[in-house]
Length: 197
Length: 200
Image (tube, rainbow over all chains, first blue to last red; front, side, top):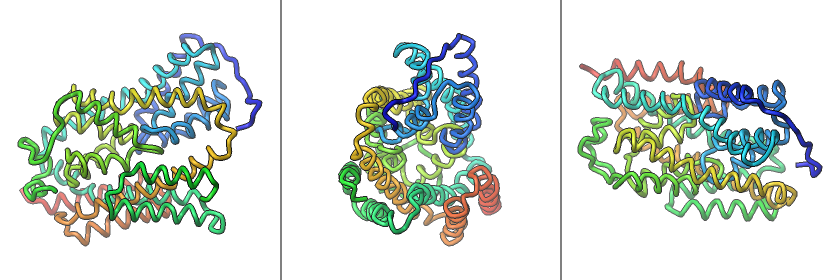
């Protein structure tokens, strides 16, 4: 990112935090396929409409959460953190984390929990069994697609062939051996550090 | 690795034939460790840890639970962790798994965010992230490959199941049709085909 980072100073009222929370509650219900699918709307809301985050803060929130260990949904926490930082201190940042994370998780986790319960209690019903079995091939296709899409975001063959080769080799190694995954991640990090992929 | 009874009666885990988490603390720490191994997403690690190492789920159970986790709103690995917790310990289990997935990774990501401004200008850092994300792409692709055997006893026959997987891959991976439409379209087709096939 650019060195003289554009700073933003905002003043968040309680009503603003409530507004933010409610917006994330709504996005939670829409986040089928993961929180990432609501990224475009989050950008619209946080950066373009409310001006609570800079573009740089928005992008780095996503990038850091992707690079860090843990579920990618933590980029939501970093957005709340940055909104809080912009409006005051690290303590306000923690409030921001609480607001955005509880907003994005409460509705979806509650719904999933109830659905899983219902499905489990009614697991002998033909409609439930056929749903789960019917989805199985789709799930396999989805996993293959996810790996493929992540890989093909690098799309200049002359420049990107080493990175494709690395992905393909990793897929092969994981598929066929039981090598610990952290070795592969470390290999990727080292190759990338020295600019080899 | 998984017994044959399991394949015939999905979700019948009243008497688990495979290992299970010992306690809520076991759930919490297992999911914490699992989350901490996931750079660029936890999905690839979930399949390795839960099915191959801990064997809390058979591949068939994983595929079934993953379908629900994927269809419900919210981050799918979080949904899956809650479903695994719920399977063995009910609501407290779901909460322990959720807390495990989130709490310590959250602290780490905040520390990283604070340090980020100092490291962001090293070209090596950006390169390392690029390399790790390429590895992750390979890992996720491999977790798809590894679940293919779970379709062996599929009620629609293995071949039809493969064709459905391939259509799904073409729609999402190649044509980039939004997930929602694929789930509503292809998912509904597959669901009704199986529904007709299953008698009683």
